[in-house]
Image (cartoon, rainbow over all chains, first blue to last red):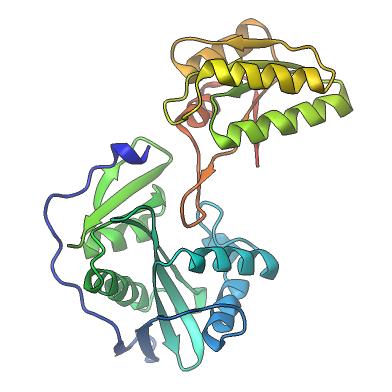
Length: 182
Length: 122
């Protein structure tokens, strides 16, 4: 499946690098920061991310992620963070409003996923968060990024198109989109 | 129940094989295994036929294993219809690096085209 993926020839413009601070559509001050260094159970940031996913609306799940239930969420996150990708978090004070991640697939391709907690959706956070993630990956030399999205999830598809993703494969239930960062 | 298990050799189809065999031992389901060519799998159909035969025999079931040629999805659907199976069983998809489930092309075709119930094994 992945070998049929078509990446754009054109390299995307430079994305803003994290950290970024802004006021969201609801007047909250949100700070988007790269999450660097080791992260594991017990860290404040890790626990705040777990808390966001525990409260995450199951109706906003996509293709089985995030999993439901704290134990499964912890297992999933530990596995995700072991893979040495890039992570960016949107903070409202000490609460995590959103998380975006690039998970390495091979040396130059990364799978992207983004999750915004339901209390923070529709306030412009997703756009800032995904731009910061792409900027962070670009800064570190990531070249190709792909994602899958359920084709009926119009708001998500619109967000990906807005930041520059192209459709890479569309013959399955989920469509694949791709961007070239470097 | 007459169950047709379609496998192509991806990891999820081997999980489906084990689950189906275990269940058949408990329930007395009649299992036929259809081995198809899955371009996404590294294992050859001949190897998969062998694995399926061994798994069924070890469980004490009749080793009804067929190797189908042609388009994998439509050959499974066609066999299910011509031999009046009650259910088609398939692997439930593979996980992407970040854990998203992705259905294989064969599963998508069978889900949309089969006239009998389709079970995806997770």
